[in-house]
Figure 1 (cartoon, one colour):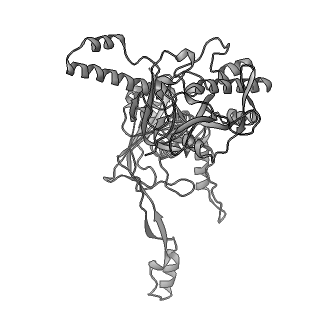
Figure 2 (cartoon, helix red, strand yellow):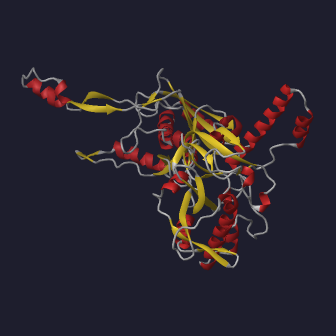
Length: 513
């Protein structure tokens, strides 16, 4: 069983606040892993000295500095109110010299400077840093626990904490209260300083330089710490934006835009777009294995489709129905999307598909041209919102009406019993929709907070019955629903879920509030 090493720092102030700042002087939230590491190093150095530190603490800290943790923090107040203090500026010698000259009117008030304070107000008292233990054990646990229990501050001197460390199962760690922060693969999100191999040695060297900063009557400045890396962290409830390239669909002679019917054309336009990408990739030297996986979404040999949560990185082909102020209309634009860390592949697609032809059999059906990001219709799909609704139905990743429930409902005459059976069917559809969001890359923490509404008809004018759309042939027997979802916070598009999410189905647009 996988376990995690959990460091818990509990603020002692009855009204918890955190005063730490980042490199730019702005309030730092959440506290960086480097800040925890420096606190552990300081506590260990006070607890163990010389050889005892080198033999006990140093190996444990060098092991820890190579691991990037997940953070679980309290929620914070949406607004932060600062205040100004006036503190001495270390010029007391000027004041005493004035007194020595008999200047009794000089006071310390003349030598005070302004100091602006902007604390982060916490709605909880504990911050936790979770370090993964793939092998399930931590050989340095006792030393690290003793160091953690010796930590007294995190942030400024007034940010007093009580520290501890423990070993938790992943299941127990998932139940910890608070907001979960994970590192992002694409470096987006909140930039936090994280220790790396060599950070401990750099801190020890900096301490020695500090002790020797006064040399031969002169002052030798101590350079700032540079042995760390900056990593992007993001709340689990804040999905990273997907990469995309957008195109307009033109007639073959480029005289005007070409329109396709969403009900019958979504599947076909997505197929033609995928064929165009595969042709461009083959012309530019992509291997068959790479084309099979990233372009077609299949296994390396191309024999089987990949699906579910374990599907590899691949392109999504999303025909975009036109959204105007009155209704949803024909498809005149397409979007190629990929996971957040696949920016290089999307850059290639944008360059390779400009001017490409969409071929239907032996005939050229249309051609593509790059669509500017300012396009109003495109913004309905790639913008940010809390509430989204489908323009093409979601294909559920499973059947919504198990046979035994359907038979019981058919044979039941009691109204109350029918309500219970219907409630079970509703719960199953909700569960399948949640599964679809998880398979599309949204975190479990986010999915558990979704507000879902679903029905056979569309949630906006011009969107037809879900049963009327022609899905990919291999998904023809799975149930389809239109869905409206409200996220706990604002999320970026594009949003596409369900079994047909790679070919234009389950596509959401910003829902007008």
